[in-house]
Image (cartoon, rainbow, N blue to C red; front, top):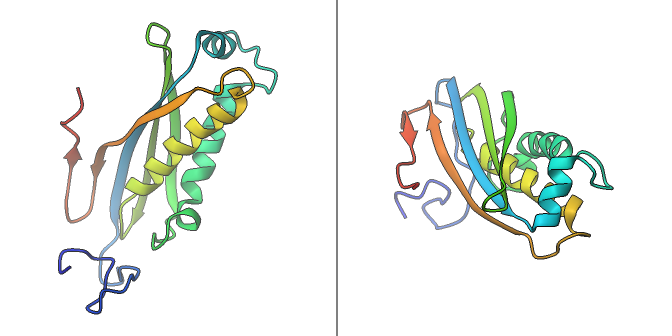
Amino acid sequence: MADLTHFNEKGEAVMVDIHEKYPTYRVAKAMGRIYVNEQVMNSIINGDNKKGDVLGIARIAGIMGAKKNCELIPLCHNIGLTNCKVDFSINQENNYVQAICEASCVGKTGVEMEALTGVTISLLTIYDMCKAIDKTMKISDVTLLEKDGGKSGHFVNNTLK
């Protein structure tokens, strides 16, 4: 367990002590997809979903989710984000909406969890807003794309196809 920083010498879960770390600029980008049927896809593209602007509301929800990450994931530090954005792209041919969340801060710990939470909450919001049309939607491919800053430096996920 020596390599696992969220456990103490007794094997108990603990928050990592970051008091000795120096603040640096940190940024992370995550992505995910929600696969939908043709009717949902059309309602998103045409902007005629009865619950409102699906992607606009999902964008706000994703940003709010990233800001509340420490309330959702045990042992995560409360991070003062300096920026967070959520962008969407639509793939009509394969019937999915892709969300990308980028979060940044100047701090002592990274923002990977904030980016991952932001993208997941945005996709869950799309599901919530469209579930009356299609209950078979599938959220998948949630992954960290890239992160930079801190001791481990720059990381790019090269496993993606």
